[in-house]
Length: 306
Image (cartoon, rainbow, N blue to C red; front, side, top):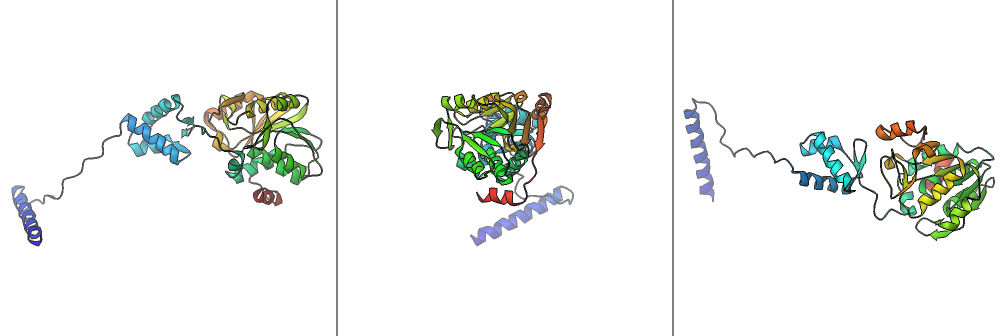
């Protein structure tokens, strides 16, 4: 083995000397041949890779993938259009997101996600409620934050809700009157749904309602939790003003069931300004966008501890 190694070194040295003589004394590189550049990904491979990326990350950007794949942004955009047409991804401004899960996370799981953003939205929404208001609040992890801040502020109001956690939170304030809707209990959401709930909601007229949603896009507001879209529509129909509480992670997406057009809501309370198509649609529908600030003081601490 040692003899072979030494002989190889001698042979390479001899070849270099011979090559230098042949090329007029210029140095010639005779190391291992240069590796060919990796072949450009084929269409099928790119699209499979995009789907894999979305299993690892909630959002991918066109520019990032184009750079990584070594193709133009227009090529990635066409890949997105093809995958979106098959329902495999959800288009978003400048990129794409995974479509809503076939098994949508339950209330407890959602409550652990984006806590600071939801608390900020809840505090900003609570400032919209004036003493003496009658409000409807539908079930959701973000609307629960609204209920907590209403309780902390001690706002004297009447709250009608289909959510047991929201009723409990608002009920901690002696200033608020709480009315809980009847209906079919949905354990994963700790809320009631169904025909009895809708019929009960339709008995009231209120100043405003606050709803959450699984998604919002230029096409409108949509929901994935079973039975929730009908509850939201019923609340919208009995309210003088409707407010949508939703964080930026749900922009440009679509849930399973349609709730309403953008023109049916008075304001959107969120943690970041919408952009692109959604921003234009909101402006066209006359929807006021309220940007939430990070909550401060004991109200934030109480929310984080719950």
